[in-house]
Amino acid sequence: MTHGFPTLTAAEAANLIKDNDVIGFGGFTPAGSPKAVSREIAQRALAEHEAGRPFSIGVITGASTGPSLDGVLAKSDAIKFRTPYQSDPELRKRINTGKTQFFDMHLSQLPQAVRYGFLGGMDWAVVEVCDIKPTGEATLTSSVGASPTFLHKAKRVILEMNRRHPAALRGFHDIYEPEDPPTRTHIPIYHASDRIGTETVMIDPAKIAGVVETDLDDEVSPFDEPNEVTIRIGENVAEFLAGEIRSGRVPGDFLPIQSGVGNIANAVLFAMGNNPGIPPFAMYTEVIQDSVIQLMRAGHIKFASGSSLTLSNAVMRDLYADLEDFRGKLLLRPQEISNNPEIVRRLGIISINTALELDLYGNVNSTHVMGRQMMNGIGGSGDFTRNAFISIFTCPSSVKGGKISPIVPMVSHLDHSEHSVQVIVTEHGVADLRGRSPHERANLIIGNCAHPDYRGLLRDYLKLGGEAHTPQSFDNAYALHRAFLAEGDMRQAAITGA
Image (cartoon, rainbow, N blue to C red; front, side, top):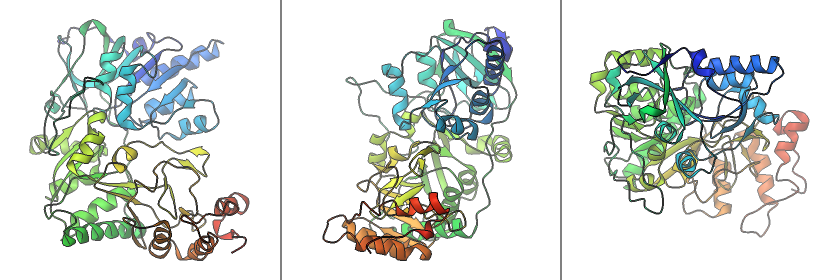
């Protein structure tokens, strides 16, 4: 082979892995995640367990992965611990039953934690590439994530050479690892489009145990079509931002946008692109989704910097067919750069993320259902929220057929405090919390954002606070949660003493 490294089957590569090894898997979301070796590690685990022998590994990734990584490893009980973020239903089940130990982390902090040894040593890096030279110079595929750090810190390396991604992706990556404290200097990014690193990663050739040839699509699930609720949320966000431009609080040529992942995020971006009061804008974000490519083709987005191309197969094929048209318009960076607080603050990024739950004072829960069950993880939302020029959280005003209100008296788990959250948006309206006291925040959130079915309950709760800076009632703070757990419907809550 032209690369000069041993060519292995996925099974041969998996047989190199030992029980209790710690593996850094490349990728960021399912984009660029390894898909062949992980499936064979899962088969290996099943065979070892059947033989009565222990076999489990520590799994560190950039973010979530696909079913051929997290999914198959979880089903085979092969994951001893997992960090920093996941979205697989099988893995989630094992995390929430205590079978897999999971610790949540801000995504920007993961690479430094690996370099510092906070997570222990790393035995293997398994990373997907579309080109590898005999010198160890490699071109990554559809994401960067934490792959550069994994490749440097792991004792040995296995590469998946995925022919589904063209070698012409060289030039779409900007690989830069900052020095660690106390010798770190500033990161010289002053515009979303600035390039500061290299096009490729350099791997010590002596560490490369072998190359596994693959030809596999990324396992990105398609998003739902926008519905009435998500469309209205998007329109409310877009009109709020257009109003900020008209008021002069946001520059006329706008600011870079960070957007979370999912159906609401897509609807928000489309609404921004369609709003005549918002000029073509740049994105400095984590995940580049289908909507970004479509809006870029339409001229509404002029540049997008992220850590992954998390695209459906159809959109990815179309992108690769027109790849040269996008050269100089897309850039993929390591997650500690895409999510770096220094850059977020410097560029004046407007962050738009989705809340799982929020309370009357602007505290946000991004991670835990009913305060106990892990959903996915905090991801990068905290990296952006705390440092944004304007931090926005969106959510529907009710879910599960109206049985759950994401707006509650007190969040059941806290990820983003009221000090970081500036704007709340639902399909009913916008609550601009900037410069508002707790009483004012609560009244804005109830009046502008809460579902009509829940406004009375929430106002009853607010009355109980009496003469207090932040009205709270310990007896009623989780009345809505208790009603759902007991009756299956938060609307059955009783606010006692109101």
